[in-house]
Length: 183
Image (cartoon, rainbow, N blue to C red; front, side):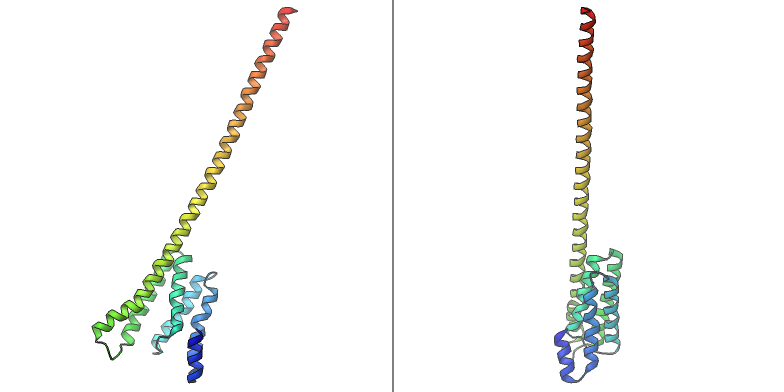
């Protein structure tokens, strides 16, 4: 974000500063509102491709937001975000072929650079979401087992109290019976 802003101001292309801010500001809201933050940045990225504004450092915000989307949103939503990024990657590769590479070479390099980073971000975020869900299920299971153990302990204590009460009752009955025999 900062290098892109500095470049934009130094060259007098202030629209690049606005673009950088529009891509970076959603990062602030990414944990509380992952879908909205991703949608805002993806929209700016789409406009960037349509308006032929070349890729800069601020575009990494989209990859970070895709990771966050995969880590904090439902899988169906994150897969839609991945699809948006892959389509955007294909559009960027088609839109900005460099002159020094052949078309086939550029498609390979561009696909790895654009789509590869999106895939890696999504896989990492999805694995974090899966692991967080797994740990939550383990914690729930441990809490359930602890609750069951406490319930079993209460049942065992109640059974022991009942056994002691029966024994006391038997002792009292034996005592009464022996008193009747003497008396």
